[in-house]
Image (cartoon, rainbow, N blue to C red):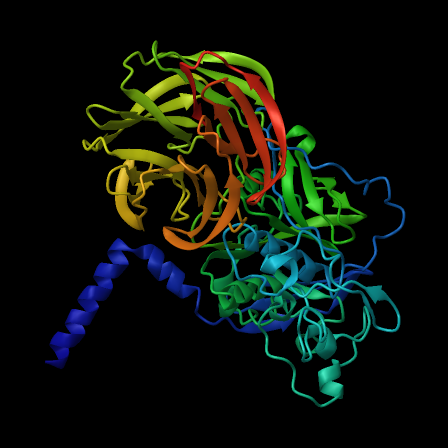
Length: 609
């Protein structure tokens, strides 16, 4: 019997090994490697030291201790000139992300980690920051917190990087109280010399990165990162466990923080850049991270910064450098403030990052355009816009059957171009026109929904998988639900619930409370009330009142960010006069209006945004 069991186990082992060698390779990463020899600690410059260790598998790892200064080194003022962050523009191969810019405290690496965590907190990965500031959402800078002094230097506070007693509602000791003496100090931490128990790690990423902690060999202001010495390979977090360095490494610490905040990490590694070793992390890979909506932690020889964008011209990298709230630039592979680009720290999440892409942008200039359809003839055209200012127009091929209605636009095939979703009011067929700007490329069939009472009310990514989903409303019974889609393929449904008053119409979807999740804009045709349902996927959370527009001739034609402030605005069209205008919004709060102008032929209808 035992021989049979052993044989059965061996059979399944061989089966797994034959069909899934990748799993076996992954498992090998956890085999402990023994350190055989350690080199001396070398100080490369005032802010950067290294030490190598040779392991039993022949690998040589380098410990990089980065202790970026609290203030920028003198002599590089021109290089550090602040720049305006350009709008993303596919035509000019420019892409930027709106990432918090925090000023130096506790250590450049932990501040950089806080900037990236703050960005995710603002873009669909909540609970990174849980304090009371800015309504519980990570602020874009740390000016709202008070300053403090260690007796030598005055610093700002940044609870997301380092907690502090008396700041952000904290009433017990935190990171600064337990670990900080003064910048560069190698003395034992205060909790050690004071013989008290250090605080429990929870809300500060610097704790998990071991920044400024003497117990892990870090002087005040410094953080440790490991890399292979003579290999361009990624040093994955699994490998860090094998080499037993995970308790020291800042990249691994970022992983631990994200997991402690309830998020699943799928990719985690450090890697030298290709200017330091052939085959290392390249500018193309950096662009891929930014294109995917992920800021990049860049380690220099003595400082850590955050990459927030790029421009193909000159391999330009837009960065936040931890020394102010401005945007700066460096060239990929070069130095910044006298410190050479060295490596990257990559920690990515499960699921897609909600992208700050411009909706309905047909000419890839980073600005929303307006799609029109002429009801009688079936003509379609796009107005290219610069905010509320008309620039020019281009025709799209006609769809002469008036039963075809445009239900919205979204990028269904993930090529960066808005596609057009159609619904046939009579037969119930739904399909997508794949577009290249205003040029029709091909079609994708979704299928039939033959009950004409079902209308497509909006398009948005309700399950955060990077694919646009379809919001339906039943005009008779008032049921609202979402089709989760994979391109044009239906995956499953999510029920929102009933709003039985047929006078309530869904006027659009947009993220009105900046939590990275699409919300639903409603308008009541009779009373003129307008409000927003704040949503968590298909789950209603709460409502936000916009107010009344009692003239029933005013219809909401769409939502888009027309003034590029990162907040969705409301596009209105008057069915009698033909006037078109935009309400600039701050969440559900009206700020001001922008006039587009009149289109008095009422056969022209705005189909998107």
